[in-house]
Image 1 (tube, rainbow, N blue to C red):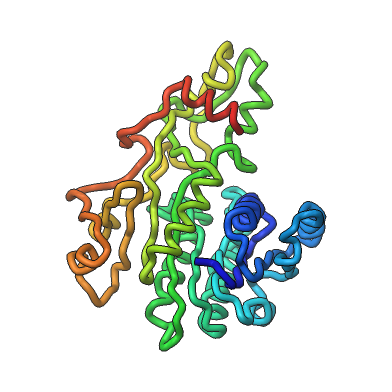
Image 2: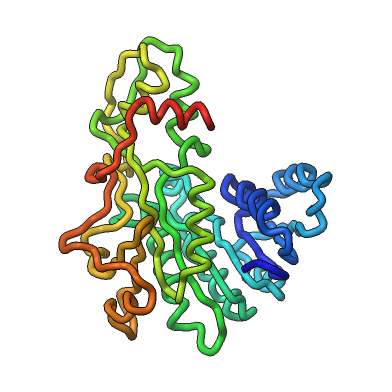
Length: 330
């Protein structure tokens, strides 16, 4: 589906962007161009050097730019077919202390991306979201909820342009920067380790799984959907025991802006949610068709009444040996 297509990824030098670039060049050798759009010149320089010996280096382009700058986005998106929007300010405490900066990037920046995609008649846009956008309790989550609404709302403002916009929502990527696993790995030889809450649970997803969800949404999206993967959960305490089996644990309580359990589909959103074998789709609240009509055309089934999708109520939990195996392969 990417043959002779030009793809641009915002925030392309981040963890997701780097892995996405690697898999795209490996799997889709007939793409025309892959544009890395980000504001960090050092990371772009390092990433460029990484691929200089690759036979597909000539397909890569590196654009310095900020999604806050609509003019620069318009220039970068000329003749682009597919946009993956991964740029965001993601650090929860930092967002609380710098609320205006978070809004400028996550909300207004996303608006710029959407408008630029429409102005340049881009075919497909996928915007990356987070579990924190579901029933948000912190500014980061609230800003991503607004970003999701803007991406979904592209269907109402695109006019006669061809852009199909979708959102993918998943939880913390296992072992990503700032996540709990690297922190615990540094403390694995300590006798005493502090954790936040004994009952805390999280969904488990890898970068590769996140990328597969993006690719799925590009194939399946009709416009305005939010794609949510079906994942296994794990208990924070089990994760800590898998990494440091001989340690004793104490609990400090959850941090400001943190949830005990991850939520990816709220009770309210379930009214518009369709279930498939390996994922869910949340349809736009404002739409011109019935859910039953969508199901007739695209398969799936309506979720049960009073449904929500949270890490604590998940049917599938990772056991400690499974967690150890996952960590050993990181």
